Image (tube, rainbow, N blue to C red; front, side, top):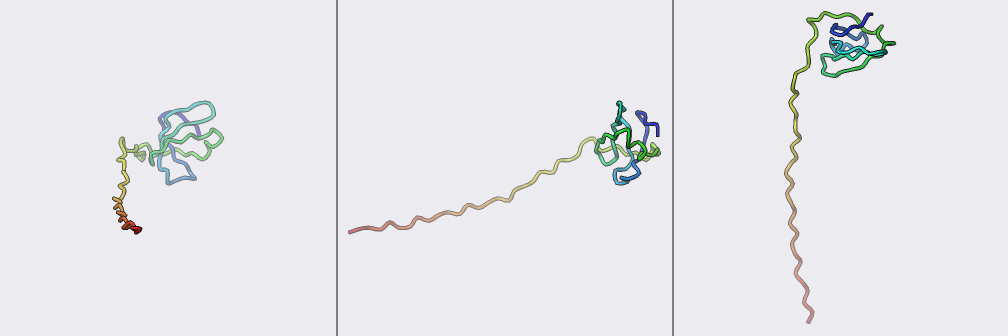
Length: 89
């Protein structure tokens, strides 16, 4: 397959990635942004696993992904009671 910037492709072995858009082509590898939001670099030796895809099937990832913050439970402190002092007579 002839890989050029701007074409839509799909990876035959990784359908869960969705359709990808070729964003850059360098010597020996192509940079592809897939619909799952991850940018992957594919070596030219693996171009045979790429297939042409319908450009309309490419869904760009959302611009901003909401950040989910972890909320820690409030810890209650255990108060230590003082033991009465022994008096020596």
